[in-house]
Amino acid sequence: MNELIKPTINDDGEQVVDARDLHDFLEIGKDFSTWFKDMTKYGFVEEKDFSPISGKSYGGRNRKDFAITIDMAKELAMIQRTEKGKQAREYFIEVEKQFNSPEMMMARSLQFANQKMLDYQEQVQIMKPKADYFDDLVERKLLTNFRDTSKELHIGQKKFINWLLDHKYVYRDKGHKRQLKHYAKYDDDLFEFRESVSEWTDKAFVQSLITPKGRATFKLLLEQDNLVFM
Image (cartoon, rainbow, N blue to C red):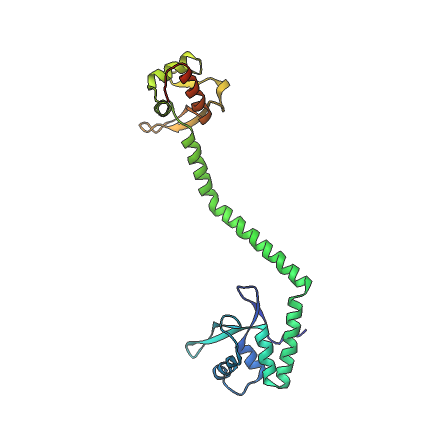
């Protein structure tokens, strides 16, 4: 099929053609603006049958053109009652038939699905840094140090640490700071090791932090020992 007037796809997925291209093909005697204004009186509705678009610059000004649906193009061609009009109408019927063929519909569906996948992948890449940030924020919020845990459990920090030491949940490291560390058997259960940075020295160090399960476990055990009252 020879392409008389090139159709395009609008944002709604409909085929449209440039009304000015149709006007030129039909070899209308009137100027485009007058002709198109007359044609709209046949009951065509703006934003349904036709939509304004920016045309090519003419004489330093952008002229106003219109994108029209294939249905409107067929009717405009028929209204002219000329051989050119008949030729255009038969052409648009064939264009519409090919557009709605199973093969073309499948091709558009695949193209739409591929575009959706590309859009999704792009969004994933955009959101990934934010997701990683909030995951890390949530994880850090769920893990608490000994001081914050003692406040949450309503027990003095020193009393809480001594209780943990007495019950062999933690031990004092042999280093010069005698840092508290949990026993390996409780790792990833009641405690987790996390790397932190000292706010005074800017040096990194590893500290034991208590998990939500650890806080719940210690709460029950401390209640049984009558050390906390919730």
